[in-house]
Each structure stands twice: as structure tokens, then as C-alpha cells.
Image 1: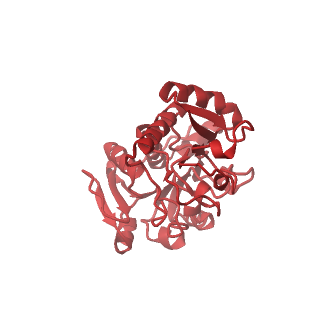
Image 2 (image 1 turned 120 degrees about the vertical axis):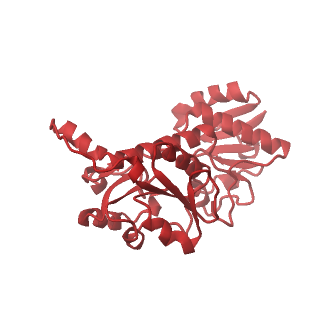
Image 3 (image 1 turned 60 degrees about the vertical axis):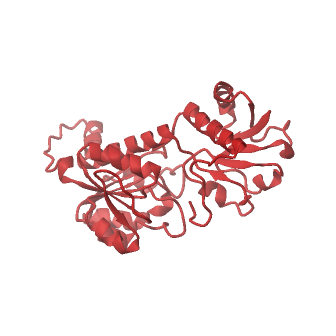
Length: 313
């Protein structure tokens, strides 16, 4: 039997992980991260979120590391993580679909001022107001055009928004305008009434949404961040909201999570906070994806969403 350790969702989630693996890959034996019955040399695969620093390096027969999320910075920030091993980011059809749903919801929420609508309900206030624009009038710009960005762009375009994507290299998607490289970044920002961040976490992308970037957006623009909290300089975002250069923001990720009580994002009238849930697929979908990745690795086939240490994602 192939031994897989899981660290995701807490130990109480282990029976659910085991049930889904039994259905999708009965040849994989699933144990909790801290199972004392399993010796480090027995472990061949791990599926993890925020593994303890140094633990992966103690597993001499580890063959592959799988992230339970699309990001891998929670693994690579361990100075001792075994960088010679394949590291696979979470993906799959359901993950991309859920991110597309979230980005669509966020763009519509900014368009229709859902934060104001929610506040009116809490206050029991009948707040009738007219919206000057519909989706057809609004330009959405998506930073990061990997599989999550591409699906989001297609879904948002399906709602009628004018969609463009920006990435390191040019992407060709029907109906989606493409911007690429630093030389086209300013032009991309200047046409983005709603800026969506789906960038990977790298030294180059941290602080991507800061005062200088925000200043290039059209007056009254909105911001959506469903990537990493490090992409947004929060004080710069708030300052732009205060002067009205930004009209609103939808934030799913923060530098400190869970977001602590009293954080100004909770009560800001123009910020909608969600709890890092944008693209979280069901456990059964993640298990199918992991089982397929392990099967591919065992067969010597190409792996999906493989982390590239040179690119940093």
C-alpha cells in the first residue's frame, strides 16, 4: 500500500479524507499527519496545508508533495522543504469553477454595490438607489491568467463584462483581450474598472496592488483579491477608498489569517470580507485530483500544476 499523510482540515477531518480516498484510490493508505504508528521512512506522499517546518525533510522516502490549496507558499517558506521533489498545486475542474464563481460574484457585488445593500438590510432601511452602469459598461482586468484566471475570465465575460487578462506571457482566449509583460502593465491597469488579482505569490508579485498601481486605475475602480494577502498593501488600499479613487474592494485573503477581531477591514463600509474560501473545492474533488496526480507520478507521466522553483509558482 502507498502511504499518504494528510494535514488539512484538522484531525477530525481524517475519516472523511479516508472515505473519499477509499472510493477513488483504495490502494492509497491515508493517515493523519501526526499518526504515531507511521514512521517517517514509510511516507511516500503528503497532502498538506502549512506543514510544520522541517517535517518534510525528515521523510527520506517522500516522493511528492501535494498542496491542498492552489498556493504553495505555505510549503516553500519552510527553509528545509525538500526542493528536489515534485510539488503539485491543487487544481482540477471544480477548483477552477469555484474560483470563476467567486470572481463573478465579486465583480457583480462591486457593480451592484452589494455592501450597501447588505448594510441596508442590517439597518432595516429601505434604500432605493439607481445603478448608473451594467456589466456591459464595465471593464474587468484579471492579473494572472493561469487555469484559475482563464476560467474566471471566461465566466466574467459571459456576464457581459469587457474582460482583459495580464500575465507574464501572452495568452490567447476567445473574447478576452490579452496584455503581457511589464511594458503593457500600465495600459492594462488604465482600462480596468475592476482589477482582479489572481497572481501567484512570488517576490515580484508581493505588493502588486499598492499606491502606484492603484493610481493608474480609472477613478472609481474596484479591487478584488483572491490570491494572497501579500499582494495588497492594505493601508494604500484604504487610503484610495477614503479619497474615492477606489469605490470598493472584495478581499478573500489577508496577511494575517484568520483576520483578527477589530481589523479595520471588518467594518469598512466599502470592503467586503470573505474568509479565504474563493476556490476551495469539495474534499471529494480534491481527493480525485490528488489520486490522479499520484497515479501519474507512479506511471512517469507529466504532472498537473507542477511548481516551478525558477518562476516561483
